[in-house]
Length: 245
Ligand SMILES: *Cc1c(COP(=O)(O)O)cnc(C)c1O
Image 1 (cartoon, rainbow, N blue to C red):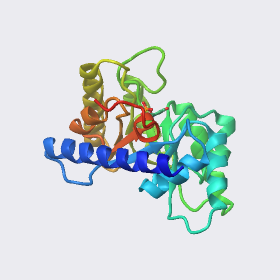
Image 2 (image 1 turned 135 degrees about the horizontal axis):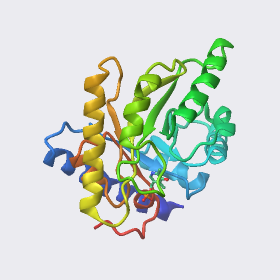
Image 3 (image 1 turned 60 degrees about the vertical axis):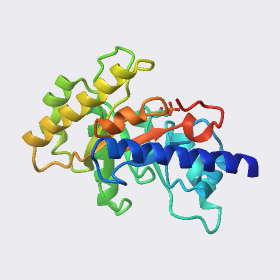
Image 4 (image 1 turned 90 degrees about the vertical axis):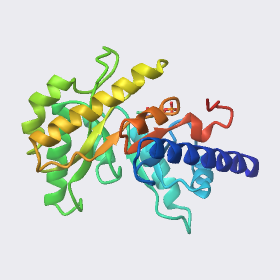
């Protein structure tokens, strides 16, 4: 594990240098993007190494894994505060497992899901079992690929009045995934997310839409150039063999 720790420490330094350079190129403030370590493909020892290397925000795409890893870390003494966010497809029958445990749910991909999260959260708030409304991001399918989940831009425009009045959730921004492979398409996707956010923020000034969760191992620099405030990095963090271009 020492060798692994050394490898992901070195990798973290490289990632942070690239994040800083992209922020500077974009004329953005240092530190204005959070780096999430997506731990869905690794187990607790690798997460512990990542904590030691300096990561404090983790992402999981399956509720059971998020619950299991949080419970395992809860047994370890002397750990700094770490957060886990839910970033994957969430079925309504799994909402209760992640409510209050996931610091934030990035993958609210339909009005039905938003309403289900909100009503369960309101019930738990009323019972004193939840401290505050569940922070969420709205997942948008900017590229329009049929295989991707999330609101299309038009669906989100139509649903927004209703979304903005759900009391059990606290909107914080938007999330998207770019198509794999083509850098210029990825960048256009991130730009589309930002433009949609700007449009909604102007139309609903009372809503907080400050977060843009976008950018993964292959395209995080393009995402930062287009305004990402949170990059979700899996392979580049945890797999020392992943080649950073
Ligand atoms: C797996 C995953 C990531 C990280 O992907 P990498 O390409 O390994 O960086 C980011 N976001 C979501 C939603 C994921 O499922």
